[in-house]
Amino acid sequence: MDKSPTASGFDLIAPIYDPLSRLVFGNALRKAQAHWLDQIPKNAAILVFGGGSGWLLARVLSGCAPRKVIYIDVAPAMIALSREKVNNDSRVEFRIGTETSITADDRVDAVLTPFILDLFTEDELKNRLLPILYKSLNDNGLWLCADFAQPKTEWQRAIMWCQYRFFRILSHISADRLPNWQLLVTNLVLAEPQQAASFFGGLVVSTYWRKSAD
Ligand SMILES: C[S@@+](CC[C@H](N)C(=O)[O-])C[C@H]1O[C@@H](n2cnc3c(N)ncnc32)[C@H](O)[C@@H]1O
Image (tube, rainbow, N blue to C red; front, side, top):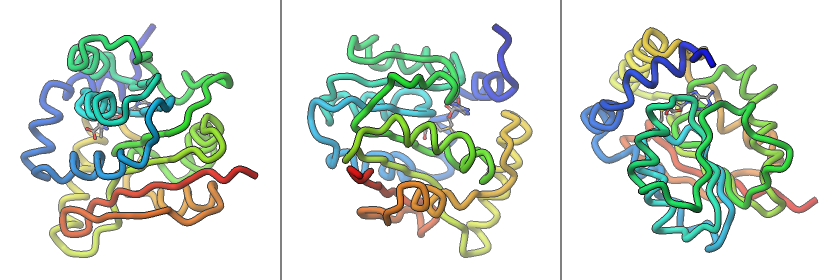
């Protein structure tokens, strides 16, 4: 199967992604991703979408004690690193692919979208990705999202500008600016986030929604 330009781009940066993100953001992105994990009940089925090199997966396995994790990433190199990091843990079903690899039978108690929604345009999020993720979530399930917030200062705008140039050139992502993912998820879930926390001077936010039972 031919790799998409996005997959090839993230394959290329897979070995340096974590050190690079730490160089720019210190521990903020990791803290944001881990912040609400304790809200996930034990023994849950969890979908991690765009998980990256596996750091979060290791935290999910050790901290949440899930019965099953569906771990999806478009970049084969990210999946290979993740497999290695968790020693091919048998609770994890690794899938190299996009949202199209989520099937109608996939039903989970928690969806995790760590620094992935920012790669899509608002149109793609609203009309394709978010509805697919939402459908996979059981009633009362949790949707944890850590991602960037709209920049408020000059230095934050500069960081976001550099990031979008970097990922558009290297990974051919479709977005050229930050989508309003918080509003789009809130509109879809028809509920405000349960809680939210800010990091890195407010440029990073970690939040979660609960899918209502009706
Ligand atoms: C910005 S990185 C974030 C990685 C990780 N979540 C983290 O914060 O360290 C985005 C990740 O999403 C993956 N990705 C990009 N587009 C994707 C898509 N359409 N479907 C699944 N994964 C995708 C990339 O391969 C990459 O691992």
